Image 1 (cartoon, one colour):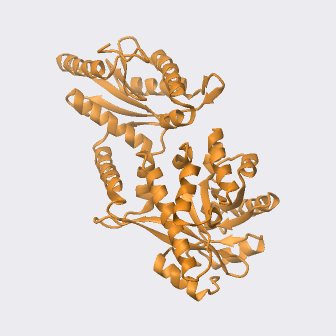
Image 2 (cartoon, one colour):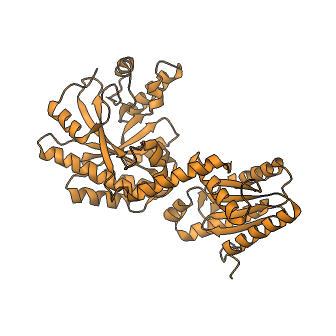
Image 3 (tube, helix red, strand yellow):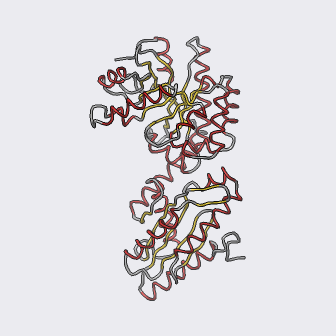
Length: 431
């Protein structure tokens, strides 16, 4: 009981660490080499949240059987906690041996896991550290493999990554960002900028999108750096609630100033929608502020519709029934079910900016943009082009009947005070 995991029957963390130290001693005596593989399953937490811990445990047992089938005689496999596993590859003669083991791991684990009436497709990230190159003791090797695993996740997941000193520096920076994010709300370091969405035909303001900004004491941090970290470490739910509350308060403030009842678009991460009570908490926040749900437009990623979990669709349907508007952000970057878009009440397709930014480049992009606009109209939805930066793009988008525009050509994201001034002026925003 002290050395084995009761669920998977694998050696536990304590025995895994002992085996790692023994491997170091043996390699020192024999002047040999070995590798440490730190295996972590991507988004495993979502299985527990979506299907319950019993299904999560069943998944781990099934995965353990698959992992065991890849272990060579003489190697060691242990579970060191949660969905994290440690594989010691002993007697490592050359890099080809290790590459072959990694290929076998990904091949065996690529197939979906069938549990009762549920089929799960889960990927894994693997960090690789080698003795003596990446560490001279067990703790150093484990830390190096763990660091490399996080690098694999940061680069898109579902891959293996070898440890390097550069990875260590990048991981240290990531940890600093994570620590700063955990204190950002309390320190009042977040703010919202507002970027208008404009009617493509008359230039009138339709609504504004709330964009998260972070200004720690060390200097402004670009969203594409800190948002992925927030998602990885599970902070997006807390941050997302702050964004929704602040956007609702600002919309309410503009109404009280006599500037109109403006809809504000808010981005929601897939991680937020996976929580069981997202709709309940979102509606509670709006009730607290005193803003009707119809004054918020929720922008969701297209990839969320690939998740077949019923409760995700249920969250969106519950919000739509209360009057909240739904938009698919970056449409065209993934493959989603059109039937599900109709079921949850999506009212707008926001065209992926990569199609708009290269309208005058590769010949297929204008065709794709036209196709998405037509699709939106055929589904009784509106279309909006993001990333509009050229006057020629405006002319083309008007010609094909795109309903709305958003981008630097019209206006950059504005601080709340500047957005308030724009509402006072109520000018045509077309160039």
